[in-house]
Image 1 (cartoon, rainbow, N blue to C red):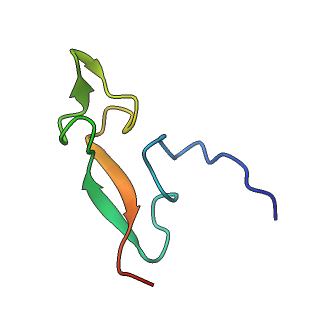
Image 2: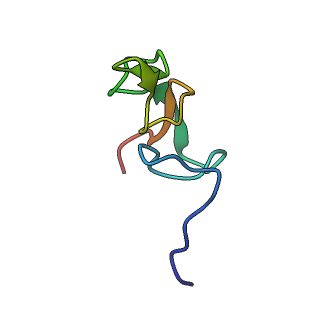
Length: 57
């Protein structure tokens, strides 16, 4: 299966929302505000959250 971009993912996401073994975390670039330097944060798409892997496999 080829890796194709998921339109629901933002650049800072490690996986699509709802992927087992992942969870929401505050965006490290904007600190969870959704804005950076007065504009929408590009890493989280303005949501203030990114999807990160949890646990340690």
